[in-house]
Amino acid sequence: MAVNKNNRLRKGDYMHSLIISTIICLLATTSFAADSFNTEVKETITTKSGLEYTSLREGTGATPGPTDTVRVNYRGTLLNGREFDSSYKSGRPVEFQLNSVIKCWTEGLQMMKVGGKAKLVCPSNLAYGEDGIVGSVPRYATLIFEVELLDIK
Image 1 (tube, rainbow, N blue to C red):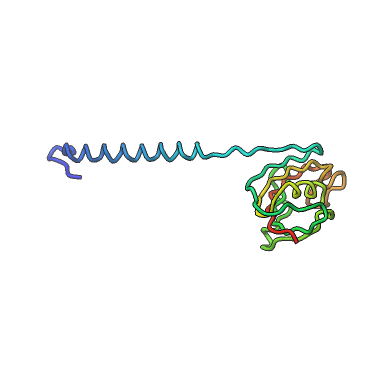
Image 2 (cartoon, helix red, strand yellow; image 1 turned 45 degrees about the horizontal axis):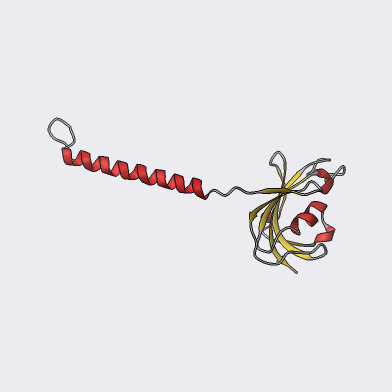
């Protein structure tokens, strides 16, 4: 920008700067308003058993039954955020039969469709209960899982 001999902006340069500043402010405000408008509130469903289910991404495929074998990616944490298990760390999804895992998973995955992702909050009676898992899950721990249902075999 050009300045005159008194170190002042010329009138045209000042107007140019003012217009640019105004446009930037308007764009920032519009972007913020659009982000606020598009924020989706996720509904949490609490089942009779006490499982809290929140869909993070709706799937479009089939829904598994109680004895189906499923392929999933997941991350399990305690209430304090400490991760105790994750298929992401191994870099490979896992497969298991739904009736051979904790009750929370058996119930929660039957609420999903292939391609979906959900958050499962599992009270201890639907997880590992009074036994826990030595070294990773304390007794009577409530567990939080993020699960992606990749396939039904």
